[in-house]
Every structure is written in structure tokens, then in C-alpha cells.
Image (cartoon, rainbow, N blue to C red; front, top):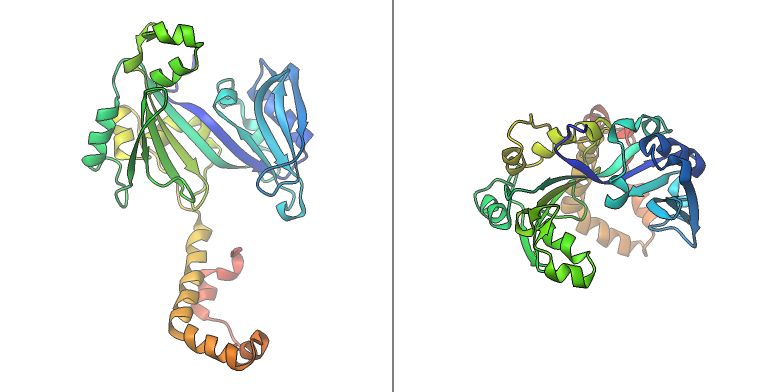
Length: 306
């Protein structure tokens, strides 16, 4: 019996391996479906990848992988959304972790309550009380969905390491029923629709590292995402993701360059125009012949920079 209180609701990872090798690594995590696994190739990839394939068990789509393209440097990206994750045996991902350069890029962790423990008003009041504040208060967006349920989006989703979505799951579940059945349904699995609620934390590896162990310790990392999350999982010890060490190093160089731009940017621009747009001519006049010792000691030559 699974002792986890939360579930994985989206898994995105990447690795430098062949698509067939990745497919084989997924099989231990989907033992009931593995004998039926196959790849259904798609016309093109997404987000700069040249090729793509759906990961299927017979005709049921588990997820997709995108691969190929010179700019992708050998990476293959795998996305397994909620429907696929429902079949994922999260304690059996070892083969995936052993793929070359395997790393999680996105992990959604969801808590579903069935007895009215959490509701829309509780979430809104918690935001007002500062229970989603870690460093600064995140924005709260309230949405009335077309199926009648309400959603709270907390934080900024794009280019952010963490985002939270809380919504009235019962109404969503009812909306997926045939129209005739949905019109008369007041309970799902014996629970009133109003009492079924879901909170999802979306973790992304923007500036933080998401170890594979987080799949196993997802309750603790859900609780550590926000004070509110700890309050709804009171018997779980919160854990937090750590900022990737190279990000601090990259920030040192970016800060130094920004200072140069502020102090000398106008002068350099005028010099560039004076030299007819010849950047090399200006560069040769200003570039030094020795390193910045403080940046060297910070390790800026040891990491990649955008």
C-alpha cells in the first residue's frame, strides 16, 4: 500500500540517451503496462526539437519524448502528464535515474482531499494571512472555470522554480463525465463534489536542482513549498529544494557586467558609433590583459553562462 499522501501529477526529465533506451528505462516504473509499450512517432518535435514520439501502452498515451536537432546537444526530453503519472510506480524509477545525465526538469506534486479539509475560501484566506510568502508575497489569481469550479493560481508560472494551483477538483471530475450523467451527479466515489479539492505544486529546475530522490520524498517537499502546505500536511517534516550552486556564480558575472553597462554603457555606445559600428575596434581599445581576481575566485570560468 502506498503510504504517500501526495502523488506525482507531472514528470518531465531529460537525458542524453537514445529514445529506445529511454523507453526501456521507463518499463520498470510502469510494470503493468510495460509489455505493451511502444513509440508512435509524430510529425515533428516541440520547442526546438526536430522529432517526437508518443510513449504508449497499446493505444493509451503515457507521455511523449522529443529529441533530435543540432541545437539540442544530444538531449531527449520526456514529459509524462497526470494521466500517465497515475500509473507510475514512483519507487521504481531507478532505471531512469541511471540514464546518462538524467535530470528532472519539472515535477508536479498534488494533494487531493476528499472530506472538505481544504476549500477555496481557506486558500484565499491563507494567502491574505501570508501563508504563501517565502521571500516575498506571491500574486493570487482567482478563476471561475467553465465547469463551475474555482481555481487559485499562486505565484508566477513562467521562468519560476515554483508555482501553485489549487482548485475544486470535484467539479473538474464531474465535467469529464457524459453530459447526462454529469447533470445528475452530486457525489463522486461517495464524496460530495464540494468536498473534493486539489492542491498542486509545480517544481521546475530553473535555478534549483530537483534530485530524483524528491519523487520518493514528495510529501516532505510539498510541505516545504509554502507554510500553507506545511499546515495541510501537519505530520510531515518539510524539506526544501536548494538553489543550484552555479546560479550564484553566474549571478556574480551578470552583476559585474550590469555594473559595466550602467557606468560605461553610454560611453561605449558613443564610441561604437564614432568607429562606424566596428565593435572589434572599440573592443581592442578597452579590453584588459589580466583576469578579475574576484570573479576567478568566485569560479565564473568553471560554469556555463547564457
